[in-house]
Amino acid sequence: MPGDQLQVLNALDVAKTQWYHFTAIVIAGMGFFTDAYDLFCISLVTKLLGRIYYHVPGSKVPGTLPPNVSAAVNGVAFCGTLTGQLFFGWLGDKLGRKKVYGMTLMIMILCSVASGLSFGHKPKSVMATLCFFRFWLGFGIGGDYPLSATIMSEYANKKTRGAFIAAVFAMQGFGIMAGGIFAIIISAVFEAKFPAPTYAEDALRSTVPQADFVWRIILMFGALPAAMTFYSRSKMPETARYTALVAKDAKQAASDMARVLQVEIEAEKGIVEYISNDKSKSYSLFSKEFMKRHGLHLLGTASTWFLLDIAFYSSNLFQKDIFSAIGWIPPAQTMSAIQEVFKIARAQTLIALCSTMPGYWFTVAFIDVIGRFAIQLMGFFFMTVFMFALAIPYDHWTHKENRIGFVVMYSLTFFFANFGPNVTTFVVPAEIFPARFRSTCHGISAASGKLGAIVGAFGFLYLAQSPDKNKTSAGYPPGIGVKNSLIMLGVVSFLGILFTFLVPEAKGKSLEEISGENGDNHENTNNGNRTVPIV
Image 1 (cartoon, rainbow, N blue to C red):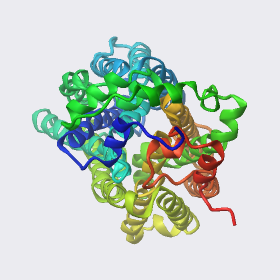
Image 2: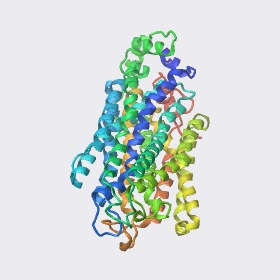
Image 3: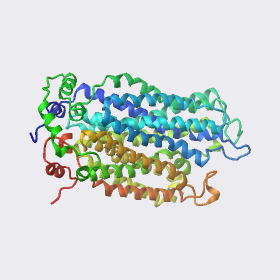
Image 4: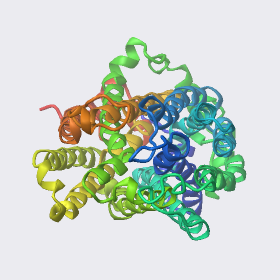
């Protein structure tokens, strides 16, 4: 039966865009809304945590988190995310997408609330419990990456599959923006209710006792959108591709999708048995046959995601430091603690609104038109260009009259990260691997990305410090400065261009055609997956 495809899978591939597609996007996308909110909201409150728990009496500048504490608070969720991506990616292939999907959301809900309830009055106890709960929050978030991408790719039709998966990921933009907007609202309410002088006017009174509630409320709010979609996730049927190709239950797959698509679908046990008994497709993960067919693809998806996240997360998490360095956010001593939260949140919300959000949705609009490969290559190229354009004349951008230009260039870097590899690195691993490895391979690729995020989150803290030890932040050794850090990020982006050539194009093909599960011989599938044709 070479070349045959199960009717249920063909029905999914050729189905017109229907209401269930949008339902799946919202259900999976709200998970990513929560993911982005929870991962990025910490950058809105780290300055506040420093003022509350690390105030130094008599100091001319507000308290800041010590380097090791700041690195832990910013990076511990990424460590949990990396672990969760590997674990839940593997579990999604073993137990099924649906069975694991609810677990991740419940972990996220509980740990979002627990993060805001971090107990203790001494700095060490508060930071330790905050880091503990944020690790497990990241663990739940990590599971959402491979499961949401895999579920959406296996539900979608082949014509608009890229846009649907990208739309799920694009919900991150709303999450980042919602975090900023909510922080603006909370800080404005508290500032109106509990006004305080600037740090320069009165160091002690500039941080009102009620400021301790601000960061807790901001962190806990992340549980709300996740809780709103928990019931809907529990009602989603298992994907037909997992049920038919992994669980080998053609009857159940046909029944589930007939109900979803509202058409009659025949249960084709014969084709399922043929695929199951085909020895050429029974290879295991990381076997010689797997490496021969998909090894370079996995290297491509993992390496590009790793390189992208070094640049993306180091820039995104430390926007507030870059804006402070060029004067877009006033010096900390000229603001009260709550005013500082407001101005950091405002700056990050503007960046999200003007560059992050448009970039995501440009990808949604064009990914099935010009393809994943072209968008990823273009994105890395312009990230490289703008990183160097920011870095080489960096002194020029620090002058007051040029600061708006710096912000515009910085925003364009984010625009092309999102209208580029930040979305495509999420989409492609959900399309190019066989169903029985799809969630695992996506988890491996995503974990590689989070390893890059950890490098960015931890490394940029130190690298961006001034080479002059008298100008470094308290507790930090001299670094290489913002200029040289941006040059390094430009080099990282250029490497992303090179590794993109290992990633195959999946536009317009069925998942089985790409991965070789439709009964075609190995030679045909391998050639069909080349990124660049061999002449």
